[in-house]
Image (cartoon, rainbow, N blue to C red; front, side):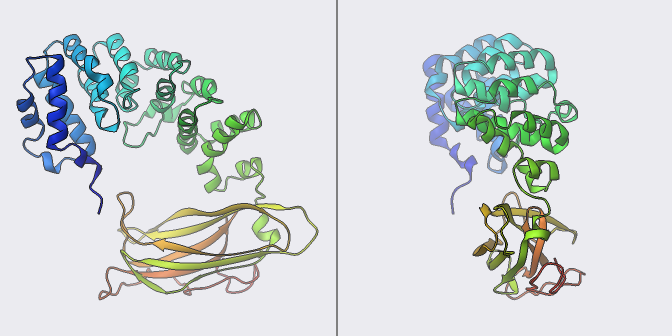
Length: 395
């Protein structure tokens, strides 16, 4: 089993880093710094808390004056490249909010070595207009890391980052930055722009739909951003977005002649997996080829017994009338950091362009020796819809 990411901050790493600091500022007590970092509660701390512990331990051992302490980190920052050094921008967030100009210059330097996408958010919250103006300037920078910070740092819903509620309510201050970066030559930057749009779509779908309609067809780079920026709206089967990308909303009803999904085993255990076989066939005819987004919709049982559906993309292709699709999908029931599984009846749907066309179910148990009570719903395991509107009627 792979070690958790937080394990990268081990004693050899901390001592090597302390030696680098001492090389730039001789009074630095490297061993006391390491003791501060690894003191009470260290083992229980998760990744972001460890980053903060390192930043505050630096603050305790570096000069008391922020400009002098920051100068030490700037002197060694080019030797400290990569994800582990996120504590450089975190130091700026903790100690530099009162010194905006100096801190902005430092974050601009540090983001190229790791990333300042988390640290910049405290400055946005404190002084929104001023900080966003600096980020607009960063969107014009020659360095792709700094351009990416302009977009990534103002995402309303950045994972692991502080939410920006004012941009969830009104994303308009973000849009000039995204406009500047909509055809950026760097994929690293374009991914960030797409993720920012996807964040905005969760609270302001109309804004993203308007942008998508305006941008689509501009350049290949922009089209890539638009497609990935609209992925949540596509998953939600938003009719305007489906139409924009060539998916016919009523394709399931009008073009799919038959569809089926079957779980090879009707029961499974948490930690195991289920093999699913699915098929569909388009009606014969002389019509135009049809773009289909085929998804697996799994209604996961939650801790309180309710269910929440998660969709997984199986295929996105254009098919001619009369074409057939037959395939296998392995569904994993292992617990993840982002999803914990619970015993109960899990409905599993085959979804075409947002419409369920066939359904089965798997009864999930805690273990091989522990039976789970199925959820209080009426369902037929491994039910398959033959012709839409007929068959078992489960679609």
